[in-house]
Image 1 (tube, helix red, strand yellow):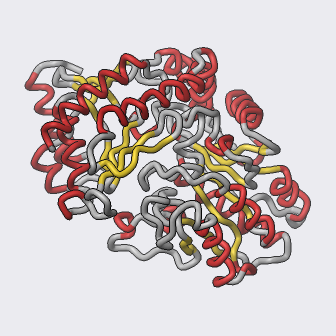
Image 2: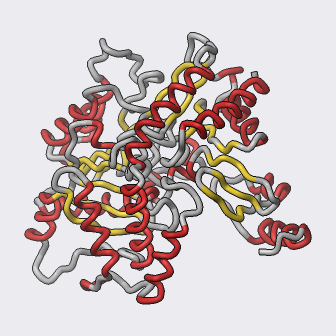
Image 3: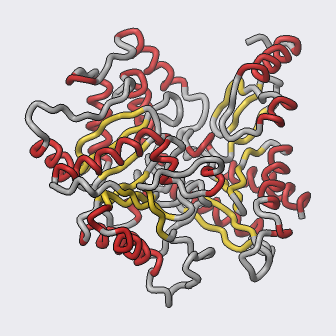
Length: 453
């Protein structure tokens, strides 16, 4: 692209006229136009106007290996020379899809041995909802159609995934599918049940069982949970929560789906978020970090008992009626293989653990002394700062999200991209981030804090 001002102005005007953007207010966009991204290196992203910024959210928690990894592009280009794509229907396969499925199955804990690749996280969750309902029907329980998700959850924006998403902003002007029901989140600071640790005895986990019993266990196919609730505010559950949740699901013969879209592929300092707890889910959804965003790719992983039920009980002659045009996309899977090579070769899972701990320590050192900082939390390279009026759960200044948004905007002016999530500020740079780069982030954040304070 030409760097001339005239060419950039024309491109911005064309974008303003023709290109739509998600999670964007159209009136503001028509006024301001797009900010054109032209490149990036490591944790920095570059813009066509010659400026740059630290990408403090790794895109959307997905650019795990950082920007500018040419070896991923080279792997995709090489695959495109051979066979860029062929449908995965009727047993057709490509080498990258087979090799990536084997690799992910070996990385996942337990017996999650079968993998189907999708185009992203929303359709991965949609696929798993369908798999859970198939499973229950084949077990002779076709009335088990409902999916239980939790408050503050984000599972996507398509019909089923959007219905499992319980954040109110994503439900404006649309009604969720009535087959999706909500239970309490393990959100200790804002407990929906009005309880507190340790006297609560994990009442939030028990609320899932309360919802199951209220709806009737014979109507529930699955419970879906993010190991760490991401878009809801980087909410880490209390110890023992997931062990109890898994026991509840097993006791009622309800499948447990783990949404590892954000937490997978090293983001939490382990390969998968579930590995922080003693868990063995029935189904897993993944996306984002599987290619670090270099190609669109998501997927589902099935436990042996789910797969064997689908294999053995499905009527003879009836194929598995799940399918998307771009399932098992060859070029996207080639990107996934190259991406995993980088993560393993550079020890980025361990780096996310070590530097992630340092990130939260520095957040506490930088902001933790202010009474408006209610909580600093996270795991691995996944962190958030929650703000509230001192001693309360009320938003700072009385207006929800306003303080966090003002802080995020002040950071953006200084060249740091972070994200306001309700009354939280999310800070989650790439897994390759160094301690020195964390210090640089903290310097910008400190200056921004002084402005909004």
